Amino acid sequence: MGNRFIGGESAHRSFFGGIRSKPQVIGLMGCALLGWAGVMWVGWPGLVLAVVLALGVFAATVTTHNGSWLERRERRQRWKARLATGTDRFLPYSAQAWEEAHAAAAGIRSGRGRAKALAAVRSRPDGADGMGWLQAAANMPGIAWHVPAGEEAYLSVAFEVSGQLRGAESSRRQEQAQAGFGALLANHASPSSLVSGVQLITRVLPPDLALNEAWVQENLSPDALDAAVASYQEVLTRTGKNTFVQRHIQVLRWPLGGDFLAAAQQYGPGRDGWRALMGQEIDSMVRALRGAQLGVVKPMSARGVVAMMLHQQNPSRPPLMVAGVSPRRMGLASRDDWNAHWVQGTDPFTGGEVVWGHRTAMITASQMETGERSPYWLLALLHNAGSGARTLSFQLELVPAEQARLLASKDVVRDMAAVIAKQNKGQLVDPGTDVNLRSARARGTDLMPGSGQHGVNWVGFITISARTHKDLTKASRRLAETAANAAGVQKLAWLDTYQSAASGTTWPIFRGLKPAKPTPGAKLMNRLAGRVEKEEKVT
Image 1 (tube, rainbow, N blue to C red):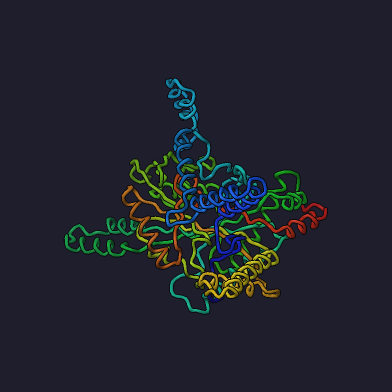
Image 2 (tube, helix red, strand yellow):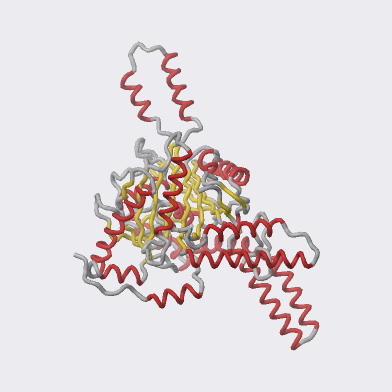
């Protein structure tokens, strides 16, 4: 597989040259039109007004290390709205919780205050808004049904895998594993595939030494010396210090579009056809994941998915502990502050109350330093980013090669135009433009016809967890430092003011990816393709 360029993708190119934000481009184009109209109708004063407005737009939208003024203002307004409506708190819905909320609201005079008291009681946490189940039976693959507000409905299934590489592996084995996963993505990127994306989740946890300690208690000699007991305890402490264990989960996404519905009709009417089709898709995906050398592959049940979600909210719970878990109770009582999501839970071993804080950051192409990276560029975020529990999740939307090739060619044309324009003016070529041009050319080479490669639209998220605000702040700074120095991520985009919803981006439910917009040509071809031909129903 070798190294690949990451960063400098088409979505960040600007008509004005360079890489700019969309609000800045729209604002400057509006000012240009206003200046033209002002000259036509008012004269020079209109042009001066447009220039002043353009300077204001630039100042409000220019990107700094703390974001733009416009982004900061949006965050402040969002947080004020959450506090005013009461959505900064979450209480899982139950008859008792609803009655208690009504009783509390009855003592509030203002209508806004009563609505705020009731808004905290909701059936789904913010990170799993609009989520239900198509199949939630025990000992069967759980098929989640998602209808998020403002997004396309889709189904998702989570698969627990043991991972490609375990311990010391040869370079040949590593190359085979990389090629196998690349083939998995390429095989499901064609327009005829019902799968639209893959979520890769790695859960990093400190080692659980409880079994070692239990073994000592059972086998400890009554006349053992205190020094020997202390020595063994020191061995356990050193073994658990700065070491971690990992759990890997792959989540697949099936959009509920016309192609899926037409294919499901061949298997039966309504939801029965959906389940039958998904049974075939799940079996096929198990074979594909095994073919990608991801080790032991096991579809997770609905209770298993919710158990993992509850564990991520309350790390005091063991992962995948399904005892007492209901697929319909996905969230724990929580509250938000500006930059953290605080969850109240119970330690299942001691029965005591615990509070865990979580903070999530987003990684996008615009935050990356454009350049070559090996397939292991993320290892620093898993192993050298401080202690504590954390989850790294990357959502990949598969883009057909024809569309990805067109976007890469647009990047090449625009970057070459910028280089030629500067050369004609006798100016030195900007190093950033030169690197972006090399990156676009490299992507174009990867997507050459016959290569078997396809494009991908991606976004990454990482959630860190701690017991206190001090520890969470310390872990945030350590993670940002590691990302900048070891992973080439210039700046982590912390999803502050809505951290409860951001937590869902690292749960095994495929949340947080904004679908890529197909080109006009791709839309036309999809319309011309129509739907699958009617065939006899599958029995």
